[in-house]
Image (cartoon, rainbow, N blue to C red; front, side):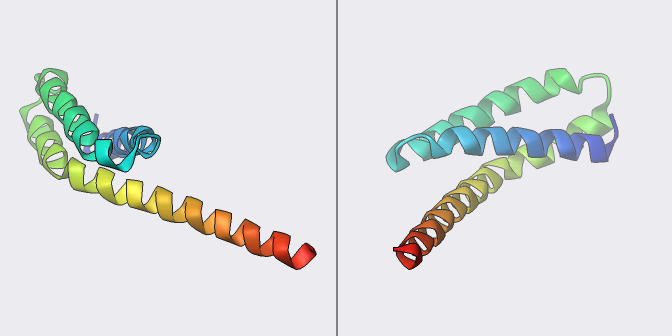
Length: 95
């Protein structure tokens, strides 16, 4: 697995965690995200044990993952509320 493949894999993990976090009440999200990122942190050394170079890159990504997940959650919420507002506006215009 090269760096690009690794980045794509981590992006998918970030998206999955964020999508799950959005379904939780806001007060539970941070703990959930930290727990999920810790699971990834524990799994990655084993996943990349055959390639120390990639393991180093993977751990750098994991170190930044919580912030990425939080940003993705915000983007998902903003997009969802924007779509809802746009839909409400459209409904009002049709009435």
